[in-house]
Length: 168
Image (tube, rainbow, N blue to C red; front, side, top):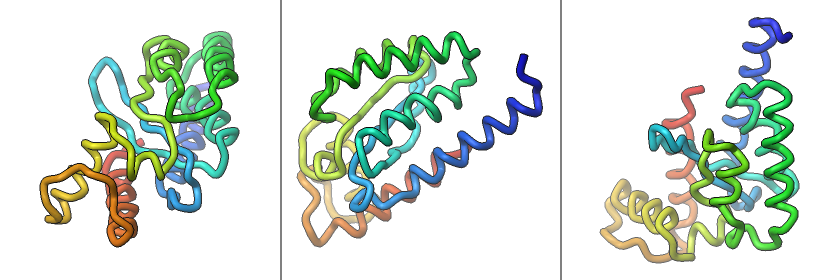
């Protein structure tokens, strides 16, 4: 049985790892995802990684750890994540619904892909984030691709979102 202080220590470690991943520059750590709470509809923040392997390890260790499952349940969720991701060669085409199922409904993967995809592709999350960015910066009311001269400000906007939403 895990003591309360060990549990708090583990949670603090996971929260610190989450803050670190959220604060990374997605130009240097181009693989990322956005998770949310399906019960409340609350969104987390984008987290960024150098490789897809690091992203998967983070989901299995940190994302599951933050949910504070008992070890047997955590192992079942980790196996489900591995199974889904083993079949995924392109993050933007990953079956997010299957990943959400792997989390047993406790975590919803809202977006999964690369920074380049977030900047240029269609999709509800991508376009809503780009529109929110442009509104926040008084750059207009369009959700089209991020222009080269907007990238620095967009990265800063994503960091601001992360720091505002990471209240772990």
